Image (cartoon, rainbow, N blue to C red; front, side, top):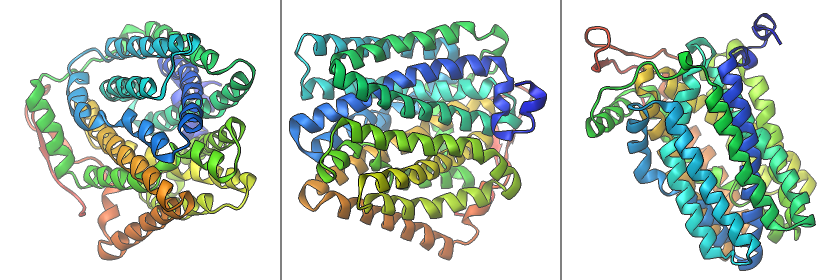
Length: 434
């Protein structure tokens, strides 16, 4: 499609930029492999241990490093060429995937080994994700940033659709080792894509802050800006109470519906379908209704749809509800992430995204482990549906007690240069209230 045609579809405008297309395509191939690995390991751990706490624990281990490493990663990503930084992280992911593959082919794959590799993968992801997010924002102009964020989430969720479907076939035909091998090879696509990004699109405004002052500066901006603070807290609470549905899919499929990899694949794929639909629909919705209304509606809607998913009486109704849950989850995270990125200059984007990732990772790790542990003792449906209803209650309480809290989601950034052009200092004028 030409840029003229793309301009008619606000959700797709980022595809008018060649470098974005390179990175988007490479990431899609890699995420197909990643979702093959996620499904394969989830089924492996659930089958071997028979415990939701173990499955949730493995998922939590992957995100736990974000608590410590994300702020450091953001400051580093703002100091170095993001293309090279992401390439190094990709090579480390490929190495860890290769180790899992060798263990599986030699018959030495164990749950403790999966836990160790998952932790190391979490470390690499925590160090790399802020740089990747900032790199994506560099590939498009500011007016196309919401499109880029939506499409980036869409490719992740296209991987969620395609990867589990392929993994289910590979697992049944050849076993876990071949699914892990495909993931290892998929990282080559990211390296090729990064190599093809033209030099003019690479980082041009790197931070001059020292490491620790840079971390402190990013934290101060996140604390003092009303919109960013709202996004951070919303991400933390949602990922604690609602997001664990992702890691607990194998538990739900195996323990509630008494099925295996095929049912797990169906539910994961259904989430991906909903997320891709959200990516296509978000642009027109934001243009027509405004960012504030769309984000507020998503925060109010995700709790009820999550409760419906967990209480579905049959697998197929659960899959249908999962499409809706995937839509709301993707739309909510995209809105919160875009809000953070739009309110800061480019030199701070990686640091702010790193704090956003920390909130996401810490909330998800705590939530998926706690809900998994409680599910073993109380029951999967009761625990997870109750958490979804609790999230809705918290959002409604905020809406009633602080009716102006969501105003900051629509307001433009108040971060402005506080010195001569190129100065690292900024002045922050807080707007809205929380």
